[in-house]
Image 1 (spheres, rainbow, N blue to C red):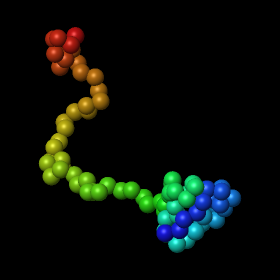
Image 2: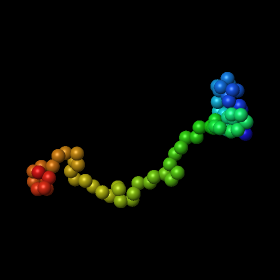
Image 3: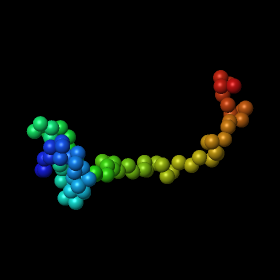
Length: 80
């Protein structure tokens, strides 16, 4: 793991980022000799457990368009 002081990080940020990309390793930024931040390689986050469709999902059939408004007969009395 590479450590760099804050002044050096300010002046060489582009090359530090290039090093992280190239070597796929973390660079620790220090202030007064103490670690304060890290430059880490970007990792695309995906789902930890890929979602699978429910087995019943393919068996459900809707015989109407759910986006169309209800008719007077279909609408419950308390919602009129």
